[in-house]
Image 1: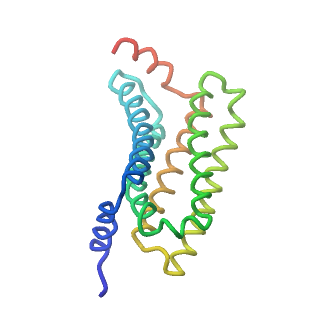
Image 2: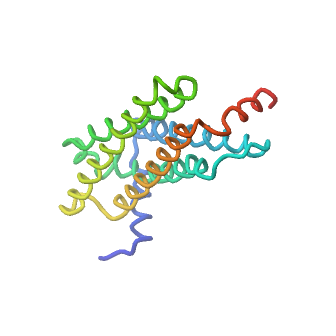
Length: 194
């Protein structure tokens, strides 16, 4: 029986009922970690904005991209922990781990680059490039799975939004760094007063 996209989303999301304790721990740790990044970036920009700091418009791409990313991984991880768990073990899971490592360390490197821009410029750019490169490898693997009927359109759309959110966030963040982090110093002066 053919289903429409809304029904497919419901079926995909309802698989969360198949989670065991380990699945919940992985899910909460992963989505929670990225939610923490969302709250930190959005909170920082909002604190600055509400206290009169004028950020370049592209800075809003950091929390907006992070929001898109978090929403997409919250969905995608359900399929990864249930219906697609076994097929991911064939190699795609390793690509995910490498991508996650490069993505997290690129964000950490960009944070450290505020105080040490000369030292962290090249490592940040390298890690950003690697996170995008491995994201592209992951997309190729997903399309192969989709074409061989080992994926579905909900997972594919989730990955589109993961890629969109990641690119929007990290390129906005890189631009912010490369332009000298305008607005950061002013926001940091406001934080102790809160």
